[in-house]
Image (tube, rainbow, N blue to C red; front, side, top):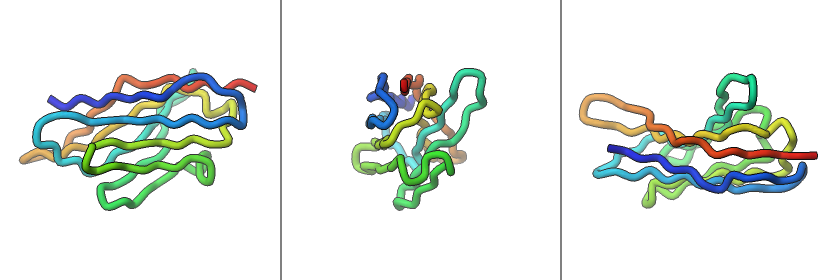
Length: 119
């Protein structure tokens, strides 16, 4: 069984920074993509950033230039450095790991971590 665990959420004032971490654990993991989605109150879940095992990244337009995603493949860990935070970044942030099995690829999700940005 694969477990995905996030940490690092919290409350911060606008303009501040937070760093989220996410680790995937399980036996003989083969992880392709990892990344972060978020869901604000009354909003749909949206992609924030993702990173492939080779290092290629993707960001939503709303966070480009402010957030940086990075990854430690050896530890199956992904980080999200969030800078210049805005009130609209307030959301629950969910980490996912795209795990390849013998016959299929499955996404595993964490429980989510709350990020609250106040003005």
